[in-house]
Image (cartoon, rainbow, N blue to C red):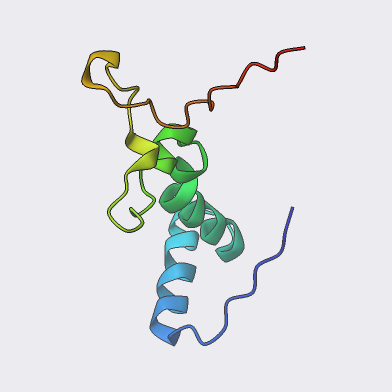
Length: 89
């Protein structure tokens, strides 16, 4: 497990954290871990596709959201392999 040091915390926040921990019968450190896990835990288990959708578009291109093109519309699907030329022997 990694260590986390939080500096310059408002003393009122520290008192509130300690009071909350006391009401639950746990240490302030344990309560701090619980608060972080509650606040960020769902982000750690988010599916990759959902995470990728949070990326901003670049120059208006939504490459990550692209779906394969309909062959009838004349466009290549995104990331389509380039056609290979036949080499005659």
